[in-house]
Length: 259
Image: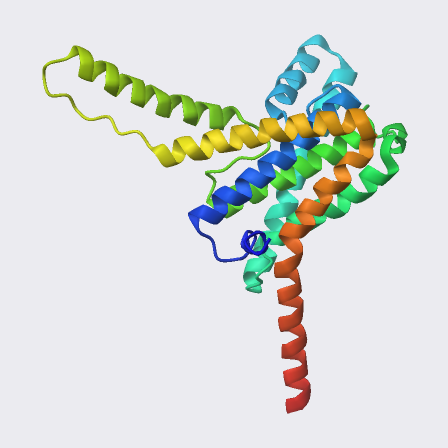
């Protein structure tokens, strides 16, 4: 628990980036799987929505077009909000610079889990219920957090890049071993990155584990299964936020004494 408190601090290390990425991948897998069972669509799958957007244009299907446009705009808005919060926190040198977006996601998940299916009935101009837009927004917000903390190397809401990285590193391993067996000439050494393999495999594994957890939770307890996910995000984001609040109070008290 003590280590979890440091995962969203301002100062970053590779180990904390990896640990935070794995936890966020678990959360994204759970939300994505639960969203599919509730809505029959994966709300973090922007590649699919981009294809759906093109299909809607070609087929002149307004509903298909609006569905994709709503999800894409919501995802992008979530990423933009994350960038605003992170840059605002950096300017003020807050310890909770990366915690603020996750806290916002948690505060959005709580009412979603408590209200449940009621949000499915809320219509929007994009021909999809409000739930789709909210989940897409949260996935964009969270994916941007992983990207910001790791300098763009970690994606937690979609696994295409991680499968690509893992496949490339496995290819390097297989190439070197087979070349060493078949060739008698000295070969140019092809280096594989075990750290990259472990990180990618961990992100994939945690995403799948989160998906299993989210699917089972939705089947057995319904929308309320996202409440523990919100609690996980709060456990990650509240400690640095409290530290900033205490620092602000101490600074305010200092200036009051001086005046």
